[in-house]
Length: 334
Image (cartoon, rainbow, N blue to C red; front, side, top):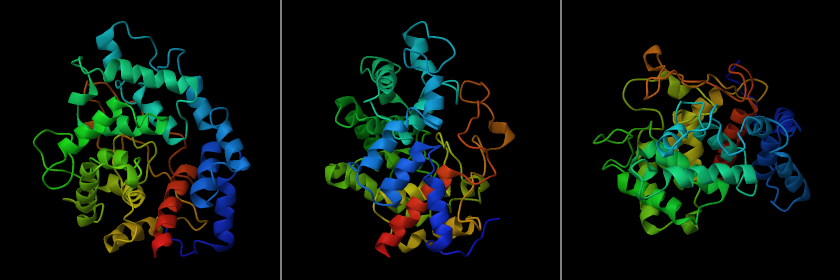
C-alpha cells in the first residue's frame, strides 16, 4: 500500500538499495551505483556492471528482437517513404520506441547494434533534403529523438544540434511546448526539456539556457500537474513513457535541470512520497497508453501495441530508481 512514513535511510532504505543492486537488471544496478551511491564511472564495479547491460536483462531482451539491419519492424521497409514512416509507426512496435528505452538503459553507439539503429534515423529521418525529416515534425517527436541520440553519443553531430535549434524555435510564448500547431504550451509536451536536460549546463548555448529557464518556470508555475481539470493519468507512474507525461516525468526532468530547491516542487514531492509503498519501493501504476478508450489508436488509425519492462501494479525497480534519483537531488540541496 502507498503512503509509507518510513525514512529514506535506515534498514528499509538499505533493503531497497540492495534490491536495486541485484544482478538481474544491470541497467538498474549501474544507475544505482552511479546516481544513488555516487560511484565513479571508472570504478571497476561500475565498469563491470555497465558491460553487462547489453547481455543481461531488459536491454538484452530488446536487442534479441532487433533485426540485423538495426530495426524492430516485423519486415524490412521497401523504400525511402516506408523507412521514414516505419521508424515511428506503428506505435509502440516500431524502432523509435525500443531505441528510446535502450538509450534510457545506458546503451551507446559503442555497441554496433545501437550504431546501426542510430544510422537508420540519420539516413531516413535527418536528411535536410527529405520531406519526411524530423526537422519539420512535432516537437514531441523531435525531443524524443534528440534525447535518444545524445544518450547514444551523438551530441556534437550537426544534425542533432539542429534538432535542438528547432526545439528552441518552437517554444511557445508562455514558455511551454505543444505538439499541436498554434497552441499554447502544455505540461503534456515535456520532451524538449527532457532533451535539454541531457546537455550539461556549462555546454548549453545562451539561447538553450534561456529556453530551459522559461520552460522550467512554465512547469513550476503549474506545480508540475495543475493544468486545467484533474487528469488522473498524470498522477500515475509509468515506464516506458513514450511521449506521455506524468508527475514523475516532470520531477525527473526539472530536478535534472538543477531546480531541485524550488518550493513549488513541494506538491509534486508530497505526491511522490504518498505513493511510496511501506517497503520503500514505488509501483508502475499502469502501462501506456493510459488514456480513455477513445484514444486507443495512433495517428495512422492503427491500434497501439502496449508493452512494458515490468508488469503494472507491483513494485518496480525502474520507477523506484527514478523516484530515489529525484529525492537524492532534492536532499542534496535541502
